[in-house]
Amino acid sequence: MSDDTYAIATGLRQHDPEFLDRLIEQHQHRLYRYLLFLTGNPALAEDFFQETWIRVLERGGQYNGKSKFESWLFAIARNLVIDASRRKKLSSLEELGDPETQAPYDPPDERSASVLQLLVNRESAQVVQLSLLKIPAYYREVLLLRFSEDLGLEEIAALTAIPVSTVKSRLYRGLAALKNAMTEGAA
Amino acid sequence: MNENPHVRAQRLMAESAVEVLGKVEEAWLREHLADCVDCAREAATARELLHALRNAPVSVPRDLAARTQLRVRLRAQEVSEAANGSLWLWVVTAASWFLGVFSAPLVWKVFSWLGSSVGVPKLVLEIGFVLWWTVPALVAVGVVLQQRALNAGTKGI
Image (cartoon, rainbow over all chains, first blue to last red; front, side, top):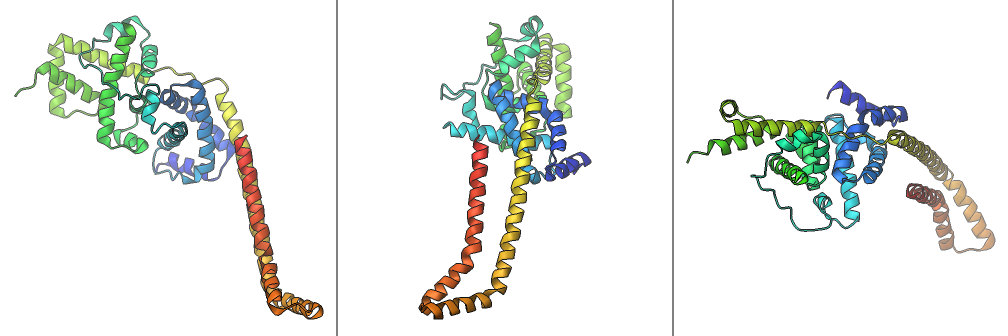
């Protein structure tokens, strides 16, 4: 257990509002970005953001400091999103990505055109952001956790409750899907 | 059957984005990219894609943190008050049980006297005595249920 996570675990057990204020300030960007990309909806992301911190307050005693605080925080946020999606009669997070059509996601053609020209001509980060919202949530989530949050494969597997092999395959397919979405956006 | 070098390079580029390549494969890929313009261009594209993914700009709504902090503080206050309420409830309940246990002989004498004065059957007296003892527990259960109803109402707002 590192000093940082130990300090966070101790602070959370004390239900100290000032300590929570600091945590909210520190982690607001990462949590909001995660929720925004997970839900694809700014208003929902805001709601879940607030609910997540309420849960952190109520269940702070359950954080033991053995894992990264971010992983624990994201797991709470993820569970809230899944619970909400179930209340709306969606059986899993997967369906968040494509609520209108229940057909399984068709993986993109690996031979899709290069996005180099697209990246040269546009603000690449903005293009990526828009394209991310076009791919299913279960790809979006692992891409964000791996490349934006720099979480390891095992950490992502623990957070999303799926095997490491599935994390890898989602990453491969997610990158291909993102590339395809960017190409389509450029067309 | 030997894998097409360009296909192999594509596969290794994808793998390198997700996990660490072995030394042999990494060296082979480096050599291939040095010789193959198309694959090198593809690798540059992949690097840019990952860079853009790492730096995807997301701006948090201006007052979201402040609104959240306010909500968390209000909830913390509720949790604290509920905890204090529960503590007092436990103290009062425990005290009433102790009083009940130690005053039982006296209460039984009072019930006996009332029974003999009014002429109530012994069975009715015993039932009355047991009911008298359950009063603190019933009151405690009532208070707990009321607190839960209030908490549920507050959360629902």
